[in-house]
Length: 363
Ligand code: MG
Image (cartoon, rainbow, N blue to C red; front, side, top):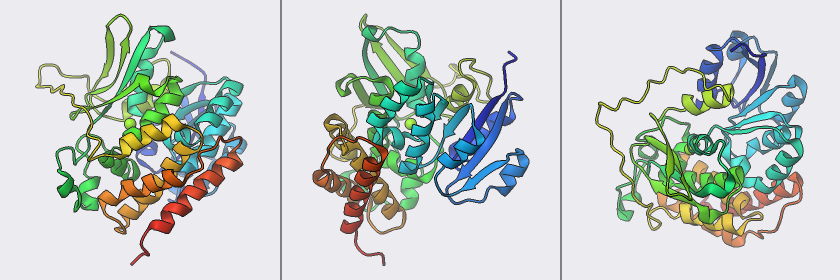
């Protein structure tokens, strides 16, 4: 259908989500990129190819949002650095396609308040949340029994605790089903990603934690389910390919064509599910606790996890040292309510400083 031009600010353009988003934008004449940002990668080539005037490498992405006045912000920044852009879009009622789950985790209460004031659309790009969002569309809240987020279980699903001791960065980066950036891939290996997604779902769908379950589903074909009070459950099913949720968010509510093939039901398809193991993957229950406690606990969880993942990627700590760093930060967090972005940034910095203080000095 012919619709008006959608002017998109793509934040985090050089990452995995950013590259796939550009592929989708290229396929539709009425989608236009008006701003590009990256954390540190040069953007000259991308800006020239997509004729983008507003470009920013590093710094606060809200400056370029002010200048470029987009209709839609695709926030694919990695980590807490995405918080400002999330709040910017929600506050103004500008459509937010959210891939930066950390911003909703760390700034959940502030984000919800800004979303209510702004009154715009918040479209999840995280595959599980896009799936649940689609299963929930048009349903009355009182009909919902519970949500189920699926987790692939990552590359170490069958590793013993002893084997996890010595896994390498390369092994952790070899995700069995999804192709993603390094931060989220390590988070998938520890199940911290599913913990962040649990908190993300709590804010996004405004449901209590006891109504959100996590299940391990190794083939990643079912991306999310909603159980309803009548005993029915709706599932979102398809090949694990991020272009589907990205396209859904960028072309909502039209659900335009992508190059992802339709699900082939003549080929073998495995739909197995198992409960997550809290002993080998303690970051998932830690995230649930942090979420239930609320206040700055989710922010502290996220901050310490970002520090720990960076340290693991740098070879400074082993895989099994990630969770204790996060647990420690949660024990020391004050957990109080957050009134504004300034207080949130303080809470984030406190947790980072604490986690960094516990790390052995770099070799
Ligand atoms: Mg996800």
